Picture 1 (cartoon, helix red, strand yellow):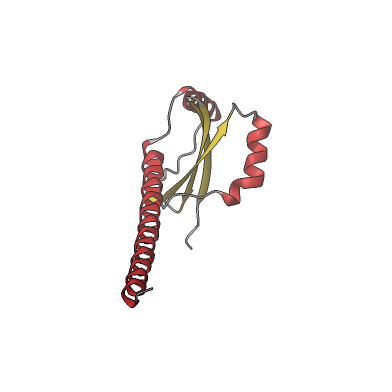
Picture 2 (cartoon, rainbow, N blue to C red; picture 1 turned 60 degrees about the vertical axis):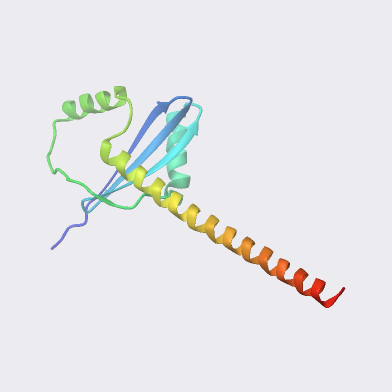
Length: 140
């Protein structure tokens, strides 16, 4: 029987001038990331409230393959590791890659949309010019 494994992690850090939260979701060995800008330093209860209200609205990046370790750790080691990650600046490289991938996809979508709008506007102006040319030719 294949067991489905899902793991979520939130990292909040200060990225001058804002506080940023990075949600990492590992689902069956695939890493997806979503980034949230909090603005002012969020309190613990504000972060918890944000998670409760907005987690399902988060736009996660496309999934990236990652290695999932299944190792039981000593609680004291877990506490030390948590303290170390809080003191570290930035986010993991896999998360950065996933965020960059999402950013590139959004950029491509914007380019396609703006190109279509530009072509539609050029076509409209061309049609308008042709119509004026016909009216002038008729002698109006």
